[in-house]
Amino acid sequence: MMNRFDGNSSREAKIRYLDGDFQIVLAGSYVTCAMTGKPIPVDELRYWSVARQEPYADAAASLEAERRAGALPDQRR
Image (cartoon, rainbow, N blue to C red; front, side):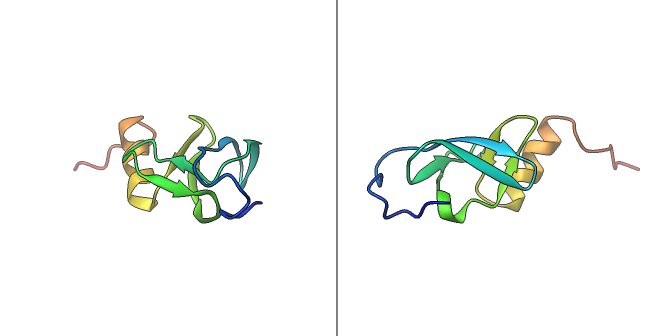
C-alpha cells in the first residue's frame, strides 16, 4: 500500500476492490466515496463493495449503499 506522500497528492487513485484487500491500478492519494462524494485518503480506506467496485467513507455510507442496492433483508415488522 502507498501513503499519501508518494507524489500523487492531487490525483485520484483507481482501485480494484477485492475481498479483504484492494489493488491499486493507477496510483493516487485518494478515492471518492460512492455515497457522499467525499475524498478518502487511500491509506485510510476501510470500506468498499467488491460486487459494485465502490469505496465508502465510513460504515454508515457502506450500510446505506447496501440498503439502496437491496442487499439487506427487509427488517420491517
